[in-house]
Image (cartoon, rainbow, N blue to C red; front, side, top):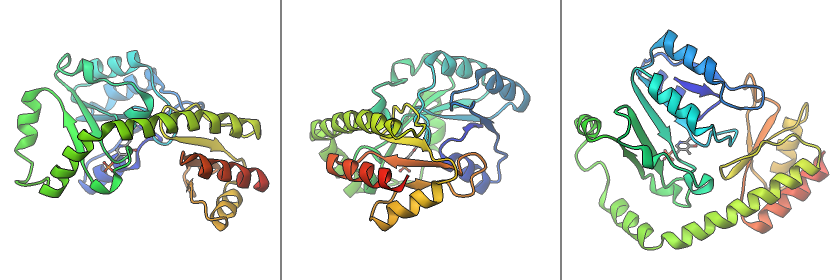
Length: 247
Ligand SMILES: *Cc1c(COP(=O)(O)O)cnc(C)c1O
C-alpha cells in the first residue's frame, strides 16, 4: 500500500513480484487523507505500507502525527522512504526502535550521487536479521563501498549543495506562482506545477530549448501537471524565462 500519486517504483515492484498493490488517493491539494488511509489499512491489512516523506511527485511533507497514526494502525511493516531528507531536513530516524514495524529507507541518489546506486535501510535488528537472509553475498561492490567512504569524508560539499538547492527551490516556487501557475509547496528538490490544457505544449517547448523536465502524459490525475527538478542557479533562471515565454 502507498498513497497515490507516489514513487512509481512501489507499484511497479509490487506488480513485478505478483503482489496486490493498493494506492490511496491524496486529496485535491496532494495532502495525505488520513481517514481514507486508516480505512484502507483496516480493509486491506497491507503487509507493507510505503510512505515517501517528502512525497514524490508532489513534494508534500505529510504531518509526522499522521505517519505515527499509520505506523500504529498498520498490521505489517511501514517503510518511511527518506530519499529527499537532505531537502526536507526532517527525519524519522529518532523514532527508529520505538515501533517494531518501522523501517527507514535512504539513498544517495538525490544527493548528487545517483550513478552510485547505493541505498540504505535501517530498522529494528529483528527485522534486519530477517532481511539479511534475502541479501545476496557481496551485494555492495567494493568500488561502491569506497565511494561511500569518500562521500562521508566530503559530506560538507554535498550538504552545501543541498542548501543552495533549497534556496533555489524557494525562489523558483515564487517565480512559478508569479506566472499564475498553481505550484505546490515542496520539501524536496523539485516542484510540481499545474498547466491546465498546456502540459504537452510547455513540455515540448522546453525540450526544444534543451530543458528536460518531467511530464506525466496519460496519468489519470497528473496529465496536466509538470515537475521540474531544481538545478544550478543559471539553469533555473533559464528554465523560468523559457517557461514564461511558452505560456
Ligand atoms: C528517487 C527515489 C528513490 C531512489 O531510488 P534509487 O533506486 O535509490 O535511485 C527512492 N524513493 C523515492 C521516493 C524516490 O523519489
